[in-house]
Length: 467
Image (cartoon, rainbow, N blue to C red; front, side, top):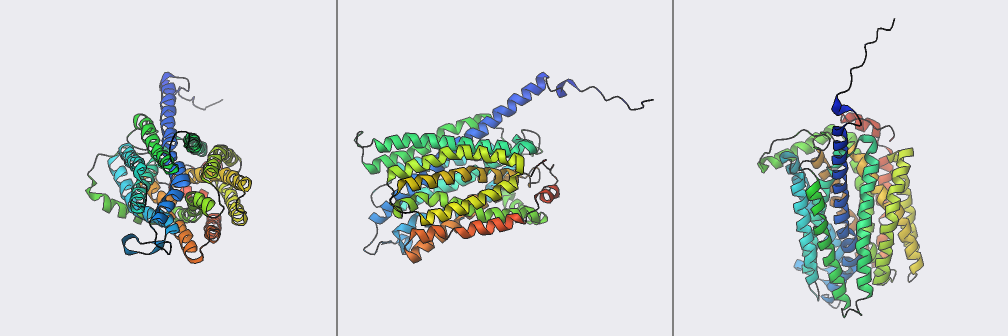
């Protein structure tokens, strides 16, 4: 006789086709779309400002202010005009370390992730729009606006990362993260198309080259501000509230944020495998970020590429990266995120080596290099983000992703610093670009040692079927 008790009937709101389940599904997709559009919005700053226009333009402005030896003297320091942009990037992200950590702690304490995320986005967009007034020899103005905009960008993006664990189940997270990166590259690429058309047609419009560049810079700030309205309307205030991953916290004053931050950093020592992963990510993504931020400078100063070729190449990176992010996301479903990221790092080493030996004044080779970068760029970053989301204790998303973002843009002061020092010593951007190989080699070696499954179990999160 069968003595097994019958299973209870599911409640109406548990049925997959029930109205409540359908409403929850629509609400989740609505929030995911708002999160995707946040990447669409802020990618304009990364692509148009950091990657294409500001590096060469600010370097030109600094050279206008240089003395006979080619040096500028900000605040009494003597540096090569060609090193001013990477040094400024390095300085800005050093400051953003403290701002990100404190803001992430504040967000988790108060539950106001969206308000802080969008607030910093609008600060960054306003600083970017103000770059329209950069010209002549006012390199310090350009440096100051870059510092403000880059700090705001880093903090806003770190807070947006905190939403990922609540927007997707463990097995869906790689796909959602990859789709977010794809939206980012699509948005950044679309604006680049418009900027390329403007730059190419600036003579017909009666604009000087400098004015066209300044309009392109300002357009990134305007784009960022306009599309940030979508996540402002569609995301909940508290990250993790989407699926109930994070318990709601009472609105508490910010007076204890420093103490809470110190507690978070001490608490991370309880998860040494999470810290080991962060160490690996710190190394290899520092190299990625430096390649991205210095690529246009390398192309213009060392390879002799004109502004049109630079914009077209970066546009190609944006377009290829859409497919690259989605492709690596699919590969991760088959082989696991860790193996896929390791494979992408091998691709980065090969790409960097080819870039070192690339002949100057050969746009075809430069475009081929851009395609290789696009294939590995989006996927390596999207999968790194989703992999880390499994290593975070529930309810501490913003704090941990702020530490992660320190390893993303915060500690990318190391790459620009190494890049700038290599140029300072050798006077060659080829030496500067090949010096970044060390970041990928060390990052690969450390990531190999990370037991991801044990790291996820250590923080008490469910383990995806494939890692």
